[in-house]
Image 1 (cartoon, rainbow, N blue to C red):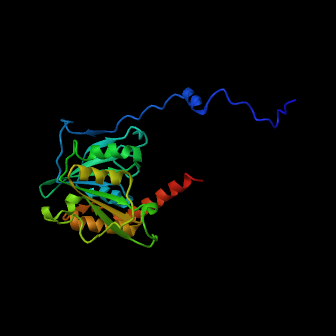
Image 2 (image 1 turned 135 degrees about the vertical axis):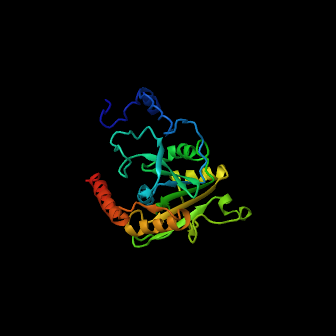
Image 3 (image 1 turned 90 degrees about the vertical axis):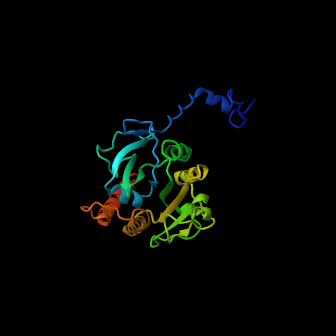
Length: 266
């Protein structure tokens, strides 16, 4: 008599891949798109400089930069507008685009306040650079990712380093770095995600591009560093809002963000 406990059970009537046939395929996400407030929504913008901010210090500084005008937004359908404030806020999940006229030149600023997945980074980079927005130069501001950095990182370290496209570094165009006095990203370290996609898009479109990454992710010292770099080399003559104590407000914002983030894991 067969031992029903120890005998090998008969094979299932379905293979594992057959079972997946009963699961409806997930719907593909709609493509991201740009919305501008101008009457001619198909207008092509040709700014002298496009600044794309993703790091917390750069977002905080540029959010308080004045005067600038909100002209559009980049919509990622997976991030609904519900929960966002009526006026632009650092707590929103959004990517607002601003215009800044400086020395008779147009500067555009994109504040990316949500985390773009690797699968969506290429599509977002193409929207921001080379289609409806064709900048002469691009500056990307991000933070150093600890797992991609070759070397030890201490919370007490405060620094910024850069990467540049070949056209930005070319001596044929009279090399004059957009941000001066910074070391290059150390060999063996890696940049990925949206920052890498944006820099690659600059390279493909033959646009002068600079990626500046800073460490640490939060702190008054790093926002002071980013502020000094931008006001010295990129936005000379531009001032932040006079009624804002930038460093103290950033300290309060960072503490509240750390508190909210910690509650997600309790």
